[in-house]
Length: 249
Length: 256
View 1 (tube, each protein chain N blue to C red):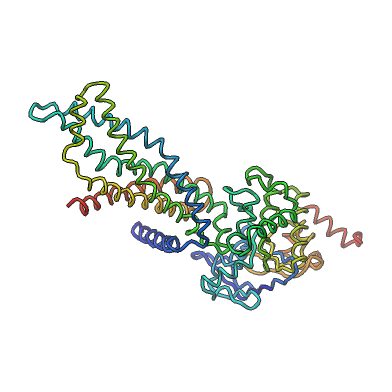
View 2 (cartoon, chains in turn yellow, green):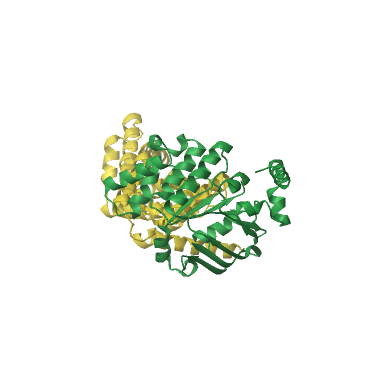
């Protein structure tokens, strides 16, 4: 039964994505919606990205500095390890998990409410491809803006570490600066951005799926929103593992 | 004209519509009446193509919607306007934008023409001054009128209304009923209204189809309705004291 439901959901997701992945009926409207979505899903998420990245970057440095008190390890290791954590995993994967909560629930509840209040039926009845009209701008908006958030997160995560070194002297600022410049591979930044684009696609499409097929009333919209966040998070973690194996080997 | 022929629709084991045959005439307000859960909304959703019947035909002037491809259905839907039970106005858009939206998507008009048409439709439903307001900022009656304006913006040949008076006070209900009726006659549309409001039935029921437990129980007009011998229909109509008194008065020839 569970397996049957799973395959049914996969089938519905594929069918919805087939409707989404068509050319917009009106390009002008699509671009206007796209800009709205960039504003709503991307620009409005900047503050949460700034705050979380800065503080987590700072905490990473404190934790590493306190736990790497080994005379054989040079102090610049703290800067090096912090950078690797921030660039490789935190800014893409963890930030995407956080965005799945903020943006995913927003998408699922918005589309879900439109479904239960018959607004999607109204679109369909007018002859509008509702999946394409509602989901494509969100999908493209998030996938194109998430790299900006990831790069911002990287910069602020490292700056958070620098900030804590500067004010607490837990590691000398010079050591930290040397560490974050050591053994730097630009590919890691591209790897992280590529992952985030994939995660953006997962967040937008999976959340839209749960909203699009919501049935009932406000209770079901709430459930759809929760399921969207949970499923997006699980899929982000699984694809993180797969992509890391594919791209880093 | 819309013809429904031998419509059967089930959800799982439950048969909701059982061999429904009906003709909905152009230039008339065709009412589908029946108790809650009798299958009225399912029939309406089958007629507009939101549901596909398990068997049977739905002919729009001879064109069978059940056999059309998706592209053909989309073209047909541009000839269809629908007023949903909860109005279904897009809450991210103002009233003006809601009416403007179908024109923008499908009309091919210039911006100036679209604005003019939108203003005309809003004026037709007496909402010209509310164009800048969002659906959450207007009353239920205004929402219904805005939804009617949106439904008629593309000059549809067919208009469907699902419970147009639900949640409205009796006075506003009459305004909405008369508006729908006037528009139907004015544009010679085929209008199908799903309702259980007996005031609407007596007010604008040019043609009435009574659905009971998924089957067509009765068919006629508002004059024939009061004289019907159909027990199920009478139980439905005369559930209210007011209509019992009307019937009694009619029997005594008091209503002339």
